[in-house]
Image 1 (cartoon, rainbow, N blue to C red):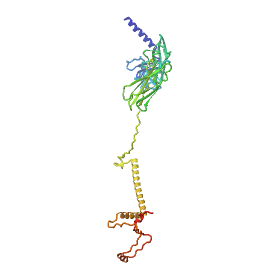
Image 2 (image 1 turned 180 degrees about the vertical axis):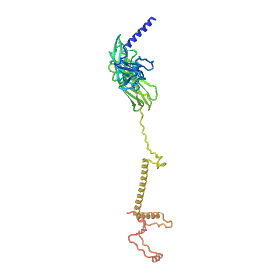
Image 3 (image 1 turned 120 degrees about the vertical axis):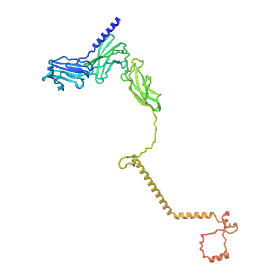
Length: 461
């Protein structure tokens, strides 16, 4: 039991020593730094002023007395402007001190300046959480902490370091832009010495110290995420995605390489699929067709020394989809106007009016062409009417000769010994008829009657 009490007492002494190593910074002379929401009481005395500040949600703090008569003869200004209601006020009360109350307060009595104090706001640092890592085996150790809110006034940061039973203080830098304290510790190769570090952050508004962090130069290796991550669908592969990336610029490639881990999932799902590779590219072959995917990468030393890097920012891609050619006919719908003089009527769009005009023009053009063809055909028939009449007459004669009357007697058989042409002697009846009818003129040499057709059929000797 005595040993336990002794160990506890020693721990308290060590913690007190470390707290003394990270004291609160004193503000400049004549400057008071307060936390937002504090209650301020300002007293003006003949020899100076007494300032009593009460932090939010704490008990009241009483101020030491002063001559009430003298207090009633005083007044206050802030940045040279009279504070309303401060004349004869004892003391000056500023409840819930905020940004609008910041300034230089001066107390005057009978026109003479008695005292002055500059009051400003400050944000004390919260308890930091220190993180130490190496970006590659050949680099130094970097330790940093990022505040969740700006620290005002600008704080001082330093590390209380113990290595190989030697204590030291390492000064750090503070980035106002990122509200970050960061430090650099020297390391050589794969040093296996144990480091014990605590971060101290202090300003005029307060101070804070981080818990102790222990590490070695070897297990502090933590690369930056892979860079230039690119992903795209593979043409012709509906279930494939091609991914490529590069080494982080901070990794010093020499005897040490990186191993990469890729995780991916459809954007509509929560569960990831993961693969590991030492290459700088990978082809996913089990993706879903026509689906959007989210992908991220991280890196680690190839022999699992140190820690995995943070995940790279997510990238998105869609699996390859074949192009679909669609032939569509654009259609124009009529526009309905519900107000104005044309209310209740169908108003066609410009495209519809153009289409109707084209149809009307086509109809008129067709009628004109048909009328022209009819006129040309009529002129042609009229000019060749005699030829058409002769042709029709010949067709009629041919049809009449093709069907001879049945009462016509067959000509007698021709004989070879009869002459080709024989005179015909008229009979008494024919003679009488010739005297009764007028004479008919005969064209000699034009009309020849062949009675013996067999002449033409006799072979020529």
